[in-house]
Image (cartoon, rainbow, N blue to C red; front, side, top):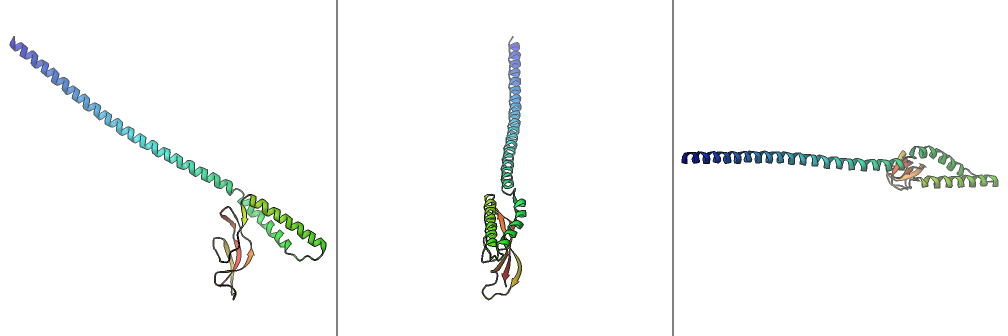
Length: 178
């Protein structure tokens, strides 16, 4: 009977050991499974954060492009109108002696002033006249000798330049001192 009790106790010990072993294996499997899930979660979280950041960058870029499109939408049209402005300015510079010619000149000046107001309303402005040549704003048509001007200074403005917002749509054509 003692033998049988020993055998039963041994059997129970083996069962307990087997259960402990199975629990350990199960625990290790759960731990491995948990580690895999955590790794997968971290990877997905990283992908989400990157995708979200990329989306935000695209959104900002699109907004900037939209604003630029609105600001510079009239650029081509404004560039075409510059020839009309040049013609009106040339008409103003014509000598006028009689009363009728002076009235016509005054009407042309009023038209030109209105033209400038409308262009400024849409962001088109004449480039300010500077003393020094700036290749970003000016186009040198020729170089001249000048005793009154130092090298690199603008001697004469041949044609006004214009810009829309910060973009030059026509550079000022100038002669530059050597």
